[in-house]
Length: 183
Image 1 (cartoon, one colour):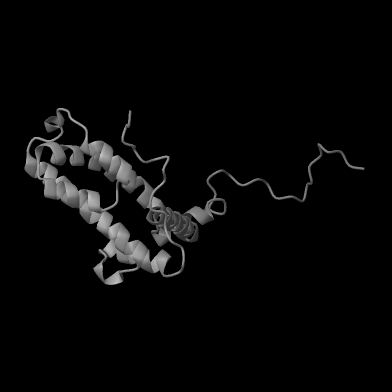
Image 2: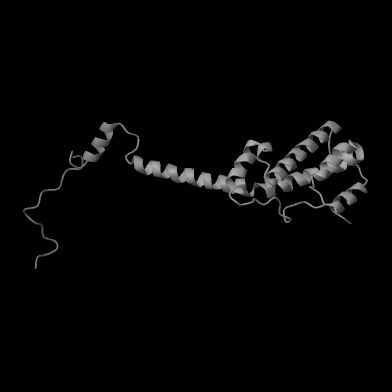
């Protein structure tokens, strides 16, 4: 049995650190003038990134209504109180007609008195906010009733992806929705 520390006299001597054989791959890479050595790995990473972004976009498109509904309901409470007490009653009734509030919430807000004029700088701002909330609620109702021709482009995309395939997106979650504080 030979010693572990003995050398084979027929073995080649080690190459110097800068021998061409040792750095041949690096020389070939530099001659190709490519920025990366493994382009397939880069393409695969991009594909993974694109797929994860597409998945996040699909999840957002499906679950966006409960979050937007809660946001708009909070604005609708302030807008309704302002319009009912200091602004246009017709706009307040149009806001109530969207069914963003329950009947008990509307009855309670109709009997509220307070300094709601601080909510908006002018009645025109309140009316614009009411119009945007009414447009959102109309779009949400059109999506859930299947009125494809009246939807905006995002609504049409959501209709084709979800409603047409039978996956009806949720419209609101009671845990997220602001409530009218009834004492």
